[in-house]
Image (tube, rainbow, N blue to C red; front, side, top):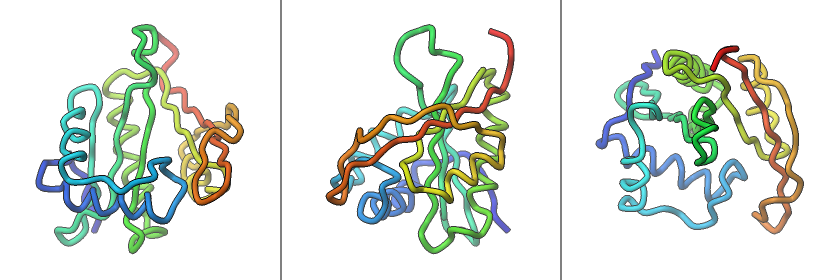
Length: 166
């Protein structure tokens, strides 16, 4: 059974491997160079409070993670957040993304966000399907904004409205 919980520092090596695998093999991230544990520790320290970082765990192994990030740095954006989800290549298609999405959206609602935004690289139909399952709607595309694996990559933006009040 998949367990979803708040990430702790000891989860970092497993999260690092998941992320570095994405860097090596996917366009889900536009990082081009694998991260070190020290770099990811700095990344990890940015989370907590208004920006939760959660993990999916199966039989004591971290198999995926999700987080909420600031959407732009100006104060008027404070009720908007950007979502990220990464899943171990060995556990995709097994409900991990759904479990993570349920919990991170629950936390976004509890934290009072008005909207959640997801940037999905063009062609990532599995991620599109996951986001649409939770009510995200396509709102636009930035064409050819990333160059990875010898090709220009588009980023499609999806948005979920959570509340109607400021």
